[in-house]
Length: 357
Image (cartoon, rainbow, N blue to C red; front, side, top):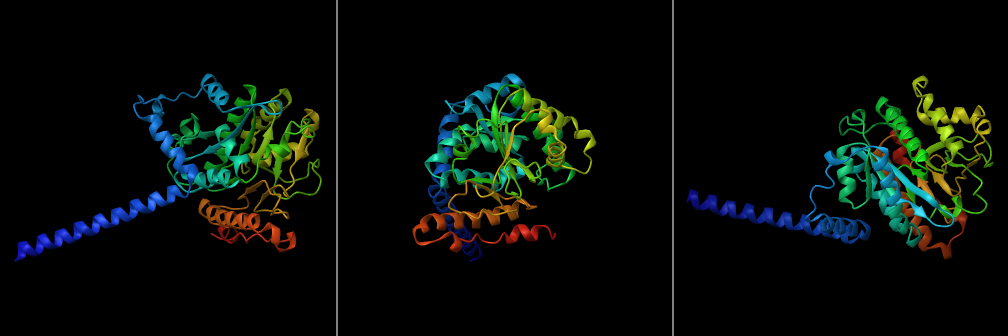
């Protein structure tokens, strides 16, 4: 009787386990099928890698200018208005393993055809091995940044922590290399959602004169005012001698920046007249189009990017960005029956609360 009971119990447990596994499989399939971008990139990457001989192993990746130049060339846009220009985003393990990188990519899907085609021009710069492997798995263009100091575990580099500040300076040094190689770029944090094609505003006959176009936390109404509070989470830089000189001067102040992030140092440089001294022409971007949690766009039908700035933790950014996605899609679907006065963004509750902990 005991053996019979044990066998019967084992059979029931096995059936339950099989049922649970089936439900998980069906749920995963549903998630992928509802996200065509992720489904297609994962499937194409899986097929592409069958039979390859460890060509994407982290151990085989070399960080030097020859390899970087090749990666930039493969990702670059080259047409009449936009020449040798790359979209660059930098991720570590915390951003790659969580939902943030997927939300970033999802925004290009939500933006429609004008943003989906830009994905092929994104170069994801991974600062650790896990982030690089996750990038490769998604079928993206990936570059492994060298430097052992970047490989310190899987914990989030919290805003203004020592690790956070160091990574920001490491990023600046990398972008100097990109400019020296002759490539212009839009640098974007992965907590910036691309809902429309920003090049329609950044690369026009009217904006061709600008060396630097940079986002602001709170736009003061004057695109030429050096007193706009800048945000280095999104900016467009043209490669030339003037911008190389600016970035080199910026990075040279790293060792004297204790207690300040790289953005603070660039802000000080701008306000001290460095742009005028180096003849760098700059435009400070209006939050009407390039908005963020610090200052929402007052025109949801015109918004191009949304940045989860003024926020401390990844989990808070993800939660509030999901609400912004829902807002944006609702605005877009019902725009014929609404006026700007009736379109209100949801409050960034999680990000507001993130500063209390």
